[in-house]
Length: 197
Image (cartoon, rainbow, N blue to C red; front, side, top):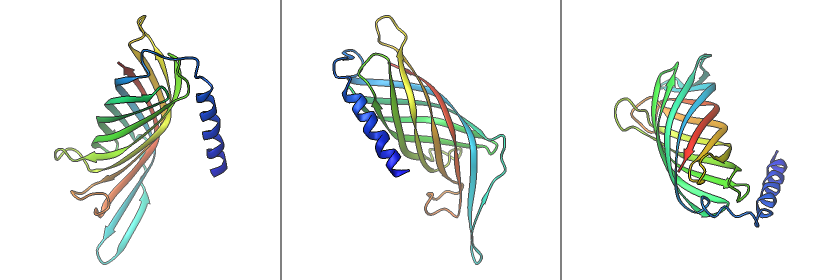
């Protein structure tokens, strides 16, 4: 598996560098904003509980209808035509079980060409803030692929459909995930549609 990952990275790197003559002079530079709506089809929920005097217990929750909806905005900067980084914030609402999160995260994107329309890889990593009693603390990690396609004649607005894997570690107490005696780990497939300005 490790060799496959290295091979994939080298192939994608070579493809990206071979596109030097196709410059996207308008949108692969400077600041940008992505506003995206998303859906997570939850495939697994594990709960870890510590009971004093008895120890740690871990079990998988039966939640066949578990899902999440999200609204996020990312403000970023292109550090070259093939790489961007940004900071994102959003609202995520999980259903069955009902959990609300307020993610703040680093968004990294690698574009496979410098064309107007191009596939990309993305990685999101960050924290879940407990801004009020209705939000739970935790951590998040998302990884996936997407495609940037311009929809305006002046090439200023693009759609970015995304598909990936989403994982969150959420504390069900007031403590952080590491200190909490009751946490859930939620993972599943992530689908999103963004608008890039």
